[in-house]
Each structure stands twice: as C-alpha cells, then as structure tokens.
Image (cartoon, rainbow, N blue to C red):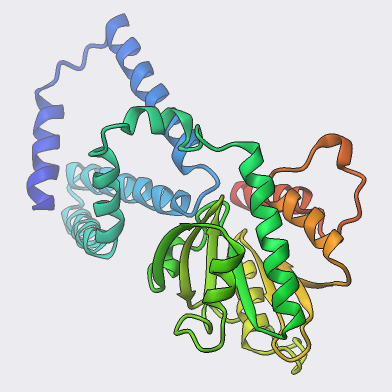
Length: 305
C-alpha cells in the first residue's frame, strides 16, 4: 500500500510542469505557512514533536533513496526505500489509537472553533480557583488521615500514553471524587490520578518508576513513580505519603516536601497558570514557570547542537 502511494506521488511530480512562476511561489508560501501554523498550534513543545521530526526524517530518506536510484546506486537505494516502507507501515500499526483519536477530532462539529480557540474558550478563571481549593481540601484530609495519594498535573498532555492504561473518568475536579478514588477500599486507590485543567482525566494510572540509584530507600513506590514521571515529562506530581502523611511535589526530577498548605496553594496556582503578577512574591517551593521555561530552553539548545 505504501509503495502504491509513493509511486502515485512520484508520478504526480513527474507529470508536473516544473517551470515555476509567481503563482507557484505564492502557492508554496501558503502551504508552508499553513504547515507552520499547525506546527506552532498543535505540535511544538508537545510529545508529538519528536514523532513529526521522525516523519520528516523518513521523507528525507525516501527522497535520498530516489536520488541514489537515479545515480545507478540501485542496491543501496532500494535497500533504503524498503526500510522506509517497513517503518512507515509499522508506524501506522503502532500509532493506530492516536490516528483514530485524530480522525475523531476532525469529525467533530465544532472542530474549527476548537482548533483556533485551543479548546479552552469556555474556561473561566473562577473555575481555576475552585480547582485549587478542591485540591487543597483533598490534600488536607488525605494528609491528616495518612491516606496515600498520587496526582499528576498533565498540563501539556505528557501523561496521555500512561492514562490510556488507567480508567477514563473525564470528570470535574472535586474533593469528594478525589477522596473516593484514594480511599483504601476502592479499586483505583493504588494508581495515580491524572488532572488536565479542571478535569480528572483518568484514575488508576500506572507511572514509570525512577531508576535513580541515589534515591533514599525510605521513598516508596508512589514517590518513585512521581519522580519517574517528572523525569520523562514536564508534568508535575503531587504525592501524599501513606506512612507519614507528608505532602510533596515532584517537578523536573526533583522532589520537595511542603511544611504548610499555603505554600502548596501558591505552587498549585503557579502550576495551573492562575497566579497574578502582583502575587508573585508569595512563598513557594518551586518556581514552576521558570523551571518549565528553563527545561524547554535546554531541550531546544540540545536540538541545535
């Protein structure tokens, strides 16, 4: 199937009149502008960015293989072309769930309005304050009763692949729901809760454990999972210890404990993007916005080296 598609594209290019005019340049500019807008809106600084770069690399290999074949280096050219075909077929199978979700997104009636608004046009600032309040009330009770909990704040869809394994909820954040999920007698209390915006996306989610050999033995599975998740993504994880009732948060592979809920509230407001500039001098443990910005700059620097 891939060979048929590639052959069709090649035949279309071969049939084109390659004498460029101003009209052709305008058409190319429009295509480049649309692709760049899609990249900035949906792909940049997300987990899909690496996938898109890999797809462009496959296209480059395919073009390079065609060039080799034209220069009578047919064995190497056909070899590279076969590898590209095999990888392309494998990607269709591997990313079948993502492709299905994307096609479902395109089929929605309000697709255009959601695409340009970023899907957050109906979100109000008052709702965010309620989210922080619900989280603080939940943590207060969980810490007091020594009930273990693990909450992931999936701001950039970093935990999407992990939440697929858990139980989908898509429910509003509330103290009652969080306490119910982490109650010891419920089936979902051992896993993590994934929160995106004002929604509990999934519960009972299994996260990757950190492999840091220097981590103290006193940290259990919840803390190791929280650190592991923050190491492989930009998500922040809130942990309540079942043994001590201590409240901690992990970000960028770093775990820090909170001594009071006021500091936690300030960090949650920063993390969820609801702090005001006039309140920037409040006491915090994590300078969350700065950490995320620094990490993105580091990643972009590595990509240029």
